[in-house]
Image 1 (spheres, helix red, strand yellow):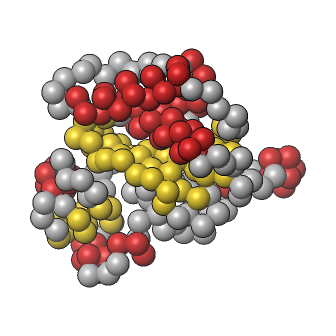
Image 2: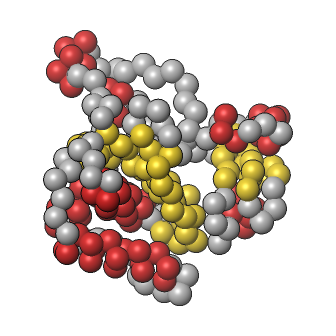
Image 3: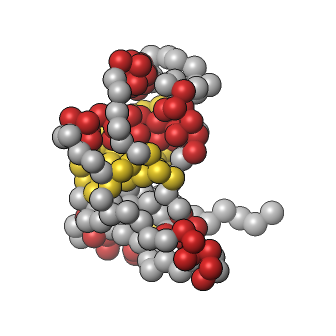
Length: 213
């Protein structure tokens, strides 16, 4: 079995800032800290350099994407519709520290963000991101479409339920308050927004991706 590659974690905003050599040390700094900003790096030098720079230069930044799909497949899929917003979630562990956000698909300007929550799952985050996106677009009377890369979240929204198996407890109570509000919103509101699956294999990571993979 190959040894897992060591990661270094830069925390720009947290209980303490700095470079941490384990996920547990990083998690202690971002847990229960509203608006925490952090990212993993492959080397200590890269993490240290990032710490002394603007986090906006690293969060959500991706290398050039080259699709492995054929020309015919790419032509069939086409290009993204930039009259849209994109949503995504990030969970460090399952369950683990979770957050979600929505961005303008073209400019990647952040439109909303929630978390980090101390205990959640990626599926819950993707569901909440979709509902938040629907409510956001309805509030702004927008005709934009809504992109997600989660088929599970799309299914839960269609069924107007969050079908998670995560047990409720004191640690995730605030998260489940949002879940209950989201389910209530779906059952009490109508919307005309079209929800579309983001074609990751053709276009790369969804623009709302947190860039922590």
